[in-house]
Structure formats: C-alpha cells, structure tokens
Image (cartoon, rainbow, N blue to C red; front, side):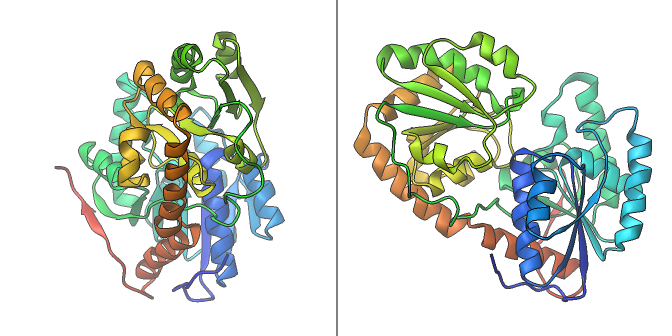
Amino acid sequence: MRHSGVLRAAATVLHISQPVDGGVARVVVDLATAQAAAGTDVHVACPREGFLPRALAAAGIRVHPWEATRSPGPRLRAETRDLKRVIDAAAPALVHAHSAKAGLAARLALRGSIPTVFQPHAWSFEAVGGPTGLLARLWERHAARWTTRTVCVSEAELATGRRAGVTGPCSVVPNGVDTARFAPEGHGPARVPLVVCVGRLCRQKGQDVLLRAWPAVAARVPEARLVLVGDGPDAARLRERAGPRVAFVGAAADAAPWYRAADVVVLPSRWEGMALAPLEAMACGRPVVVTDVDGARESLPRDHRPHALVPPEDPEALARALIALLRDGALRDALGRRGRLHVLDHHDARRAAAAIDAVYGELLGTAPTERRECTTT
C-alpha cells in the first residue's frame, strides 16, 4: 500500500503499542506497512504474542519485544525501564505511542527527550470512573508536557480531551481501512436475516446491550440470527446471557467474510475514538448500526445517521434500528452502496498514513501540517 510520504528516507520511526489485538493493532499494522513501503525505517515495540507481532513479522517490519500488560499495574516501573532500553536500541528520530498503556510507558521513559506522538485511540479516562478515572485525567493533563503532538482519530475525541483539560498541540487524523481487503465481493448476504457484531468481547463494545436488545428483534423478525465475532474478558458472561439464535464464533483472523455475509453490522459501543468495525463493514458494502459515541457521526455519511445512529446504553432504540433495517432490503442496499463510496472518499488507510506522515514531517522539520492547540474550553 503506497502513499506519498514526506519523511526523509533515513528517518527511523518507532511505534509502541499495547494492545496487540483489535482495532488499535490493525491501525498500527496498516500504518507501519504503508510507511515501510514508502521508504521509512519502521520499527515496532510490542508484546511477543498476539495479532500485532505476527502481522508485522509477515510484513517484514522489525519488531522489538516489549513485555507489558494491557493495563497499568505493579510492573509499570520495570516495563518503563525495559521500554527505555528498546528505544535506546532502535535510536528513533520519532516515537509514536498507541493507546493508553503505551502512551503511559513511552512518555515516562522519554519525558520529551525526542519528538513523541501520542494517539489515544479513545481516552483512558472514558473507560473508568471514580478515583481511577480522576487519576487518568490528571495523568493525561500532566503527560501533555511530554507529548510533542497528540493525534486524535476524530474531532469528537479531540473535544473530549479538551473538556478533560488535556492541552498542547493536536492533530485530527480520521481512521482509515484497507479498501482493497475490505470490499463488497465474495460472500453475499445470508439466506436468513443475519446481524453481525465484530469486536472484542468487553464492556467498551457493549455486546451486553445488544443481547438485551435482541429478544425484541427476534420477536419482530423471528428468522433473524445474531453472530458475535470476537473474544475477550466478557466472553463467558455474555454467553450465559445469550438466548436462542445467537452464536459466538470467537476471534476471526479475517472479519471481511463476516461483514459480507451480514445483512446489518452492529457495534453498540459505550465509548470509542473512531471505531474500525463500522468503517470495515461499510467498505464491504454493508449497512451499519452504531451508538452515538466519539467518532460515530464523523464516520457515517450524513444520510446514514437517521438509520444507523442510536444512543448508547439504549437497547430499545438499538432494537428498533435493527428491526427497521432487517425489514427493508432496498434501504439496506442503498446504505451499503453509499457507505462504500464514503469510505473510499474519506477513510482509505492510504489517506490516513499520508496524514500521519505529514505530522511526522512537521515534527522532524521536513514538511508543514495542520495542528491545533488543545486548550480547555
């Protein structure tokens, strides 16, 4: 996947990521492979196990093992020390830390000593409440002094950071997907009405809300089936709650066949920066139903919003939207075609990679780019 890079060929970029699965990992793989194809010397630090290191190795990207848990814990000091050794060995011109844990360890290790990009992929303080949430907000405010540029994946994510008091230079680069890999070809919609939800089985993705909505859908569209694609910490609890005509198929190495088989793809998240699954589904020509969290409105064509956007934590509204689409094939087809065009125009992974390279170019003094001061409002 080539794009027009603006980095000097000799520049070394080190991506740091924990998690190693899910949407963040897919973003890192797409970005690292695009940058490597454009001539950048790309390295990635991440744990040894999971989708991310396997996909990077297959793409010929150099991976530096960094053993770190997904959440902060008693090993944070050792993890930060280990990461500093990785950074010293890679000797990058710029570090790009993805998600909260990598952003925490990288900024503690570097403290602004080299250009540091932080991409939250949804703010950590949205995931927790009470004292832990307050500590997360305080950390992000403090760490802004060691962040050369914060990259948000949506204007809404940027606004959430501003409201939390996160300051400093920011850029917005919407998520992109591989529109060749995710394309409306191969499998067609299923013989029975099929709703598919692709995502990590965890509180963030809201599958519990979907299971509460499903009996109402099944009552109105009795032949409909629901498939949950993914794995995660809530798998056992969700299986206990699931009723008839609901299937759990585990994590999929390639979700594209599931998107193509679906009549509707649903993601009832409680929070996001800008979710990848709806973009991938639209790229495959399928209609989506998503919750109105950060990035959702920006990821949808305007004419999709009345049909595709529902409040979070609202199983009744979710059921109504799914029922309406399952019972209207012409509308599904029209939304699918329009969604594909929208992703091609606004959310191609090559566009996202080029925008990130423009940010790097400014920070390394090779190109100008757009930035904004993240100040509280």
